[in-house]
Amino acid sequence: MIWWSMPTTRTNTTCTDGTTTGCSNVFRVEKVDDCCCTFRVLAPNTDTTSLYPYVSTDSIFTININCICGVRCLNDTYVECL
Image (cartoon, rainbow, N blue to C red; front, side, top):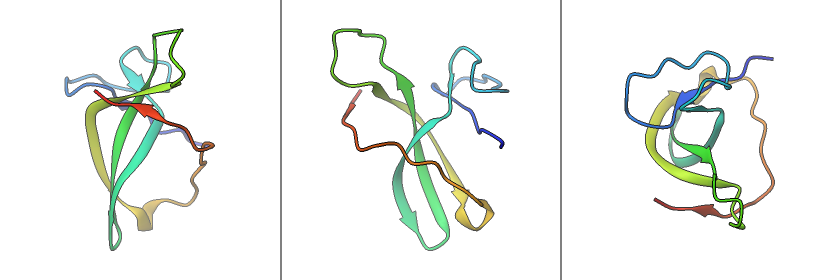
């Protein structure tokens, strides 16, 4: 199985395997328009006292969902916004 990993900021970070610092492989669907889907990259929450496991980032990407053959969904959760 291949895991996509995207930068958590809009810098020129190269993400290779989901463990690269400044990268994440957890995304939230922001918008679906025909076969085009916009995702927001979520980052692990570093606040250990928070109830939210992820925080929203300002990093987004768009992909043709006809190119996706499988998606692993997480349980419903709240995401702390920026």
